Length: 65
Image 1 (cartoon, helix red, strand yellow):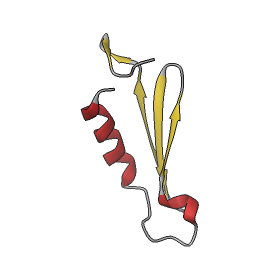
Image 2 (cartoon, helix red, strand yellow):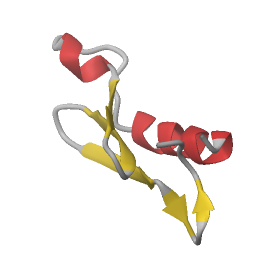
Image 3 (cartoon, rainbow, N blue to C red):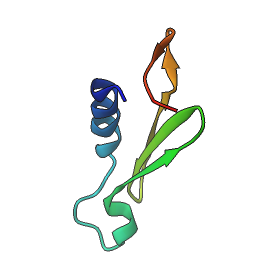
């Protein structure tokens, strides 16, 4: 996995994550691995930020399948 690409996606979605929340499910980042991409989602009660890292970008492999 491209570390820089992953760290950027984590940084982007973490802006939506609430550290102090009465609803514990809103205090983390959901990561979903698919056959062709990795999806990261951060949310709070007001916004959702989702980033998708595709398997390849401009022919360069970002993820190992």
